[in-house]
Image (cartoon, rainbow, N blue to C red; front, side, top):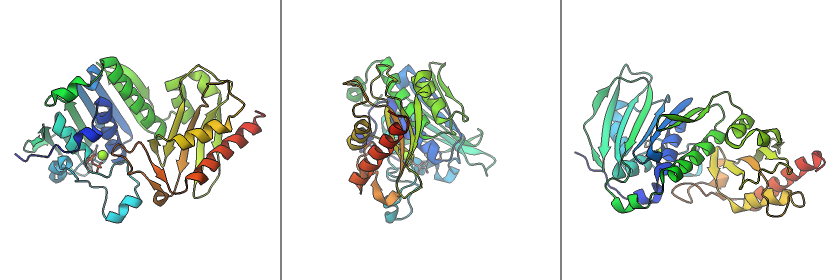
Length: 323
Ligand code: ADP
Ligand code: MG
């Protein structure tokens, strides 16, 4: 059998939620309209992701687990014009190195699909598969061959919580996507395609937050801010309800969070956070998403411009509500 190297797995795959994140991003990249996620024991026993996307050609199936094999970049230059969630070609290779994976897929133009397994980096021969078009991945016994890393996993409830956060970010970033999350055969979230962003906010954070939302839009421009902020009086004693996205990708950023907080200056009780669901559209060559393997952090070419745009747009919107 072909042996896939186990390098770099630790960087990207830390816990079940990291697996879910990578699989969901692949499903989104494949143009899926519906994604079903099933977990057992917080994802430590089983993570199954089924999508209705474009699938993988049977001939390309073994490549999916090869490190640095990606179908998404054609030229080196593409790294500065990234429009897909994935581009490193490392996720499936990493997951296949630390779990027992079954990958089944069919492209819409083929009468049947194929299946391949990868266990601790060892690939099985390809077999025919009769499922419907799209991709179905099962990841079993995460870290079964890495007892030390397995020991670092937390309780089932904690691991499930991390997966829920991952699914929340993806659901907020992709209105129009039908998402289902089940844990031990029980429904956790069912988000229909028709659910708008405020509907999604209501589903995850409650109706009071949705009812307190104001829409923001900085207007058509190369760099644009859209999304929703919450009335400062809406206080559920919540931790930070600050979700930031750039070009459809969730990211963590001190500076943008600070700009949001600054726009609320004088309106909040001390110690409270401004709530916002903010989407930046930035020309791809002005944002580097390749700063960190998990792509949680990004770097903007014009950081101070983004800061002012966020603060000014939100401040103006709050003033319009006489706040
Ligand atoms: P990357 O997403 O960075 O390209 P991955 O290791 O996540 O790398 O995936 C490797 C390749 O496998 C992808 O480039 C894609 O061609 C294919 N692939 C993985 N998951 C899916 C999916 N759900 N639908 C279609 N193709 C997929
Ligand atoms: Mg990927």
